[in-house]
Length: 371
Image 1 (cartoon, helix red, strand yellow):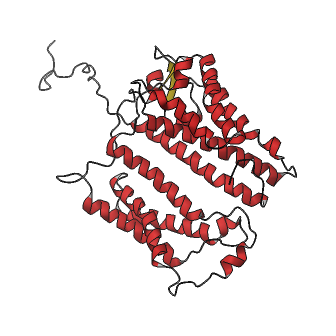
Image 2 (spheres, helix red, strand yellow):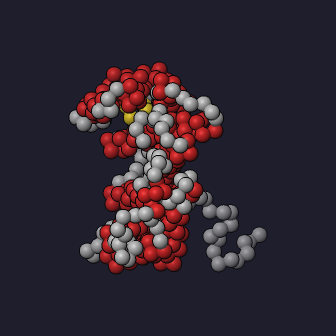
Image 3 (cartoon, rainbow, N blue to C red):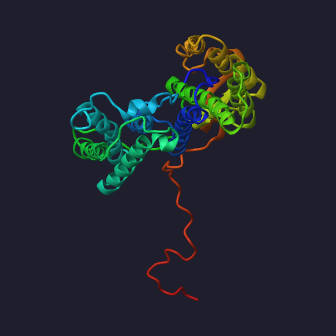
C-alpha cells in the first residue's frame, strides 16, 4: 500500500486495502489480551502454540484476500482469461498450499484447544467455506470481479487439511513418554521482567494500529465524502494518531501503557519502584521513542525507523532490567500490568484455607445433646 497517505485507485478498493489489515491487527490485539488475562505470560511450548494460533489465523486471512489488488485496471480481463490453466483446474502446488494453510487449524484444535473431531470438522468446513466465499466474490463484492481462483475442490482441500492436522495431533502429539508436553497453558503470575520479544510485539501492534488506522480513516473519508486529501494534509494523520496512542491514552490509564502494551499486559513504572510512572515521564518517553518512529515512517526514509528502535534496544540487551535508552533517560521501566495492579490470571488455581466448621458439625453420631 505504500505510505498511509497514498490515495491512488478507487475509494472502495483503497478502503478495503487499509481495513483488512487493520481488522487483523485489532483482532490480534484482542486475542493477545485475552490470553494474557487468562493465563499470564506466554512461556514454553504452550506459549508458542498460543502464538501459532495467532499466526495461523493471520495466514488464513492472508490466503483469503491474497493477492489483494490496489486497483481495478484490467483486473477482470486478466482473471477472466487466465493463461494456460492446468488440466485439472488447480495445480498440485496450489492444492498443497491450501492444505498447509488449514493444517494448523486442526492441529491446534486438538492439541491446544482440546476439541473433538466433529467440532474440528465443523470449524474447518466453516472456515474453508468462508475463505472460498471471500475469494470467489472479490472480497464480498468490493471488487467488480473475483481476483483469485476458488472452487469446491479448494474448499474440500481446506477441510482435508484441517482433518489431517487433527489426526497429526491425535497420533503424534500429546502427553506420555516420548511425546510433547501438554498444549494448553497453565496460568502463572505475570511478575517477571517482560522479555524483548514481548515488548517488540507490543510495538508492532501499536505500529499496525496507527499505520492502518490512519490509512483507514483517510480511505473512509474519501469514500463517504467528496474531500480529496492532499499529500501534505494526509501526511499529518499518522503522527496525529501516534500522538493520541502514545502520549494521550497512556495518561488516562493506570498502567501508563499504549494500546499495544495493553494487549500484551505491559505497563510503565518508575525506575526504582513498582508504582506507575509519572505522567510527565510518560510524555517525555513518548517524545523520545514512539513519536520519532512514527514521524520517520512519514517524513524520512523508511530505514530510519528500525534504526531508532535498534538504538533504543541497544542498552536493553545488556541490562538485566531490560531498560532501553529512552527508559534510562526518563527514569522509567517497562514492566507488567500485574506488577502495577496486583491482578492475577483468571485461570490461576489458588489455594484457599478451609472456612470454619458450621455450628453443630462433628458432634458425633447424631445423638441428641443432653439437657
